[in-house]
Image: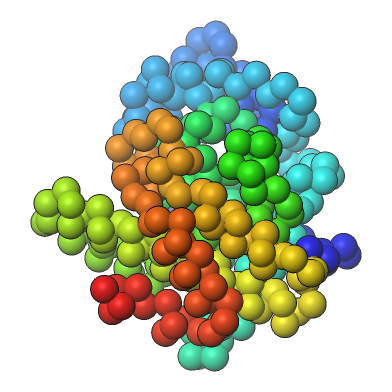
Length: 283
Ligand SMILES: [Zn+2]
């Protein structure tokens, strides 16, 4: 991708390093325990889970986050901020075509584990979007895995992953996430899984729409779309989410086949319009 000199999003929060919260408060001692009980009360999470997520991070090789300081300048963080900014620009443009205002999601960079409104996010789950706090959660080490384990290297493959999670945010804004969870509660396991697959494929298609606009903006290089297609094929959510944990990982029950994922991503790229991504109607 050609992202040099492009705008960086201000919606990225860096929680790498201490594996902790942005509060930057000491976890040990009485103050820490009070803090954990308080957080547990606020978030409704098990205090032991919170303790694990607050103190569990080793943060090896990750730059420590500096709450209130300048944003991390490492290549990975800058790249993510630029990709997120390009999704913001794309969706702002698409929403404005129908007179709507786009509310961008937040994105949290973390290492190992971090609290979210959907429960504790763990690196092993792969990237995920939490509708309850409208935030994408991402551990950058996932991209090494994407390269080595899943054979999908390249910066566009990484950007595609971010764009897919932003696709889930678009579904939340459209009220679809709520609708699908309600439908899933009423349906059996098989139908529930089918609904999830349709939701995933739509997020792939939305990632394709972003890809189309990124191409128009001159952000793509030769071979980028192929990189994205390879990533779409390589990362069925089933393969990403080795450690499914209930609602913490909305993607964990769900996967389209590689072929389906490629098809819907391509459809988004080629049409560049929301109505081309109605996976539910296509059923
Ligand atoms: Zn997904």
